[in-house]
Image (cartoon, rainbow, N blue to C red):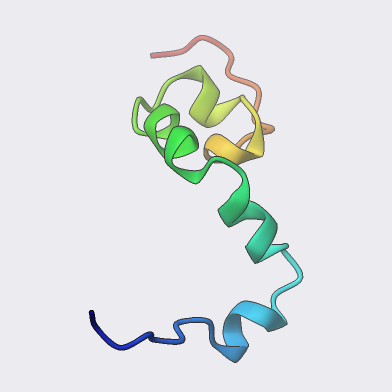
Length: 59
């Protein structure tokens, strides 16, 4: 086996955004939803993309 690498840096621990909580929060499932770039990405939960915007229906 390879050598264990410590990839967590001081940058990860200094953020106020809750980095570790976001990584535990179904990151792969959220990325799959975000890749669709649909309503969930723009108007949905913040986990999926921008979140919080109100889409007015324009194309």
